[in-house]
Image (tube, rainbow, N blue to C red):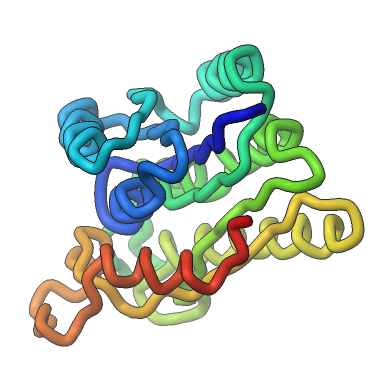
Length: 215
């Protein structure tokens, strides 16, 4: 693998979008998200910086699609240097006694179940020297956060297990803690919040990446 490849799952908005833009042109970006228009906007930004991207308008919950994507990445580049996983479903806040079955299933499918195939599929692409990034947003046990807090905390628990298992073998698995950001996800949870007090995703992307040794 001669070209540095970064896989961003959840690249259409928020932190994922900002990370993809920040990593280009140093990395060729494989951008995964369901929203084609947003991926095309990201591609325009990356090209304007002199970088390049491969757009993958795919649903991370579809195991067969992710298997096909990872096989294609392997066949073309032989692996990746970096995986940043930012895809998330932010269901509406609600009391635990009023959990909506569809929102619950989508939260479990996107925030947790997808990890069950993404980690096994992406790990061989990272090899011993790659790095995987996960992003903590701890609302476990908070009132009204039954959908999101439960599934997001479970996602991070799996990431921590993987990190502990690979300390001596690689890849390096990081659980990073972004500051509160002005994103659509946070907007759903705190619609009346003063947005001027929140960090810009682009600034957080730069700060978090600066904390890593990307070689």
